[in-house]
Length: 446
Ligand SMILES: [Zn+2]
Image 1 (cartoon, rainbow, N blue to C red):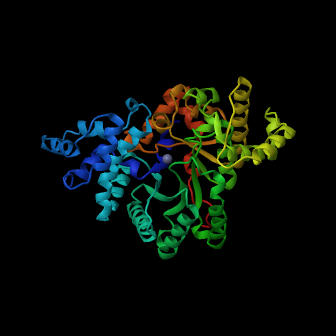
Image 2: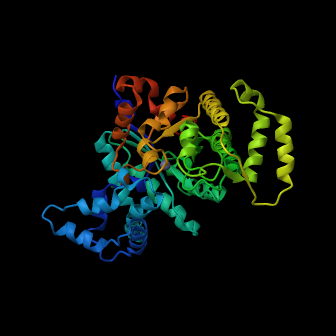
Image 3: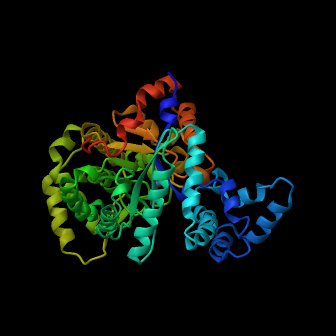
C-alpha cells in the first residue's frame, strides 16, 4: 500500500496559489510592458530592501534561447530562505496580483484556470476542490468572477479529473458573500454540481467564529429548501492567532466546528505545542481583548464537565468573579496573563479535548505542511502540528494550499509527511485513509 490515493485528491488549494513560475512567465511574456507593477515593486522593496525591475526580469528571460526563469523564480517563489515573513510572502504574491489584474480586466482569467486544471491532471490528480476569493465592492463583478471560475472548472472537469469549487466569502460580510453565491446558483443552475461549498480564508484575527453564525443560519434554510444544491462550509482557523491567548485560539477551532463546518483549514492552534507557540515571539499570546476572555469564560463554564474529564480544572466561582470585573471595564481593554508550566500543560489537555470532540463529530482537519512552515509560524519540521494530529483520532487530510508560489505540489507534501512523521508510506496511507470520503457534496440526494 502506497500513498497514491492521498496524492490523487487535493482538498485544500487556492486557485491563485496554483500558478507556478512558468505560468507566471506565460501570463506576462506578451504584456509585461503594459502592466502596472507598482504594487509589486513597492512591497518588494519594503520587504527585501531592493527595488526590483519586473520589466527587465521578463525582457531578460525572453531574450535567452530557452527562456531562463531563474530570476523570475527568485522574485516569485516563496521558499524557506524567505524566513516565514508574511510581508515577504505578500510582496512575492503581488507579482501575481499585478499580472492577474491585467488578465481580469480582459476576463481571460478562465484560461489560467484551464492551465491549472491541466497541470493537476498531468500530475495525476483525479479530484480537486478549488477555492477562490474575489474582493470587490461591486456585486455584479463578484458574481461574474465566480461564475467564470465555476464554468471553467466545470468545462475543464473530466478526462480523469473531477474539479469542484468552494467560493471564499469575505470574513467581514459572510452573509452578503453567501447571498451572492445563492444568487449565482439561482441564475446558473448548471453550476450546482461544480459549486459545492463556501470557504472562509484570509486574515482571521478580528473575526471570531461566532460572527459567521448568520451565514450558517441562512445556509441551513437554503440547504433544507434546496437539498439538491446544498452547500457545506470550509473554514481556515487557528492558523494565525498572535492577537489572542492560546486557550482562545484552541476554542476558536472548536467553535468553528460546532457551527457545523465540514473541514477546518490548518487548525495549527490545536496541534502546535503551547510551549513552542509562546516561544516564537516576545510576549506571544500573553494579551487579548476583554471580549475574548469573556467568551473564554463562557466557554469554560459551558464545557466544564467535559473539560474536567480531560484534566482541565475549572473553578466556576473564580471565573464568575472575573467575568463580573471584566464586564465593568471600558470597551477595547485587554487582559494580560503570563504562562506557567501548569497553564501550558492545561492547554495541551484542551487541545486533546477539542481533537477528541472533532473526532467524535467527524470534523476534518486539513493540514498543509509547507504552507505552515513558510507562512504559518511553525518553526520547523519536528514541531509541525501534523505530528500531533497524526497521533490523535481526528479525520485528517494533507493539502498543498498554494503549491505554485511554494513550488511544492501535493505529492511533495505527502512525501514530506512520510519523511518527517516517523510513518512509512504504508503507515501514513493507513492513518489517513481515502481523502475522497471527505469531499463536499455527499449529503446531496442522488
Ligand atoms: Zn488555505
